[in-house]
Image 1 (cartoon, rainbow, N blue to C red):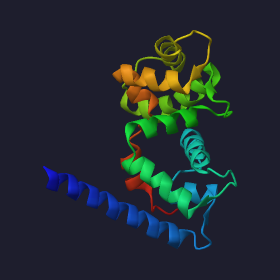
Image 2 (image 1 turned 45 degrees about the vertical axis):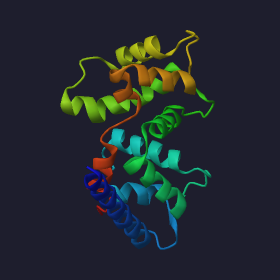
Image 3 (image 1 turned 90 degrees about the vertical axis):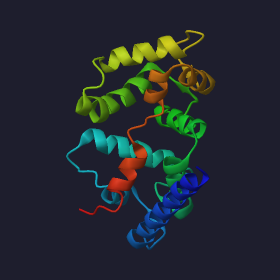
Length: 188
């Protein structure tokens, strides 16, 4: 059992090393800009949903908000996506939902991400028969404990950990690990 975990971890480390080599090859200046990020991950310009999703991801990883990912931000992003624990991934997901950065989620912010996920994830798999508005309403019913129309980080974390449906939705798990491994390194 320990050997399987060790092998899996080594594989992840090897994949991270490969992705870092791609970064150095694609970004010899040491800065990865949004258009390069999209190109590396193979996001077609015709896909508005995927483009918006990748822009949201990019900005969530740009911790110093200079509109470029340096090597440290890139490695931190890969570590979170490929190896992050559920608590860290939920905090990251909250940051993705919180478009205005005020530390609270309103219905508009939640609906925006749900619409993107609905088009990218749900419509391709026909998993959900709920509309984005219905999904948003259900999230607020389950998570907004004080019914003030806003979700705090603590409400978000507690709500996600109490309900499996909500956990799967809120952590924005669009098979991020598989998507990164499959798409990183594509060039147009």
